Amino acid sequence: PIQCLSVNNDLLFITCSGGEYQEWNSETNNFVTYTIPGQVQLWNTNTMTLITSVEFSQGSTPWHIINSPINNEVFVALSGEDGSPGTAGVVCLSYVSDNISIKWEKYSDDFDNATLHVIAISDDGETLFVSSRGAGYLYILDANEGNLIQSISFTSPPTIASPAGVAVLSSIVDMAISDISFVPQIVSLNNYPNPFNPRTTISFSNLKMQNITVEIFDLQGRVVESFYNRHLLPGIHSIDWNAESYPSGQYLINMSNGTHRKTAKATLIK
Figure 1: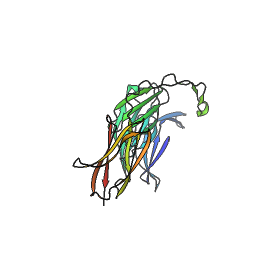
Figure 2: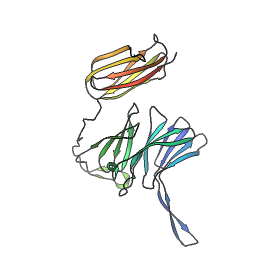
Figure 3: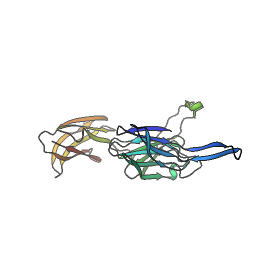
Figure 4: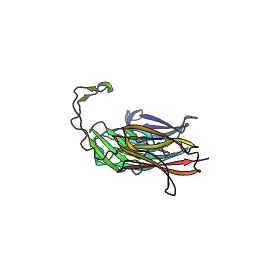
């Protein structure tokens, strides 16, 4: 096992890297080699029983796993095996209480020999960030379809030695991102609780000082509330919206800086 992830209080995901093991055969007087495929297992934590599992190739090496903030989905970085093209990738698994299924799998020549490692997801559940230990890249993927959006190369990486799994930095050099034109100026937008009655906190973050407008629309396209429309410092910001005077239903929260926008849905239940 590599990593565990608890979801929905009573479900536990476990990633298993797989590999080979040998067992002595007394009849033939030699060792027999068995192959263990990479797996992602789903367990019931109330009974500690295995519910089901999904298998990948032997060299896939399922590694870090994260949960979607908006759907019953998890994302797994398949570390891959050096010299085995097509084994490294990223996988999206949908789950219910008694089953998991593959929603999408993304393999790319860009991932070969990269040793995919840490995986993270944006607050809105739309963008994945996957780092590689060997190639010095950060990969950006669309969380809905698995499409590779961008690969960021970190130039002049520091020399690292790893005795007994402990990384030792032997020299420090400057690192630069080769292309940051893709980086969104608006990073996240969400509200909690959702559904809500009658108050919810709208949270968002931006990467640089810019003019920000947050507007709330009903489903007829009418603006019911408007906030800011002024320059905000980079960081995390929040708004307390009191919808006591509005009817139950769905509302759209729109955040814009003039050239980029994000939209989130909020459900008011009275």
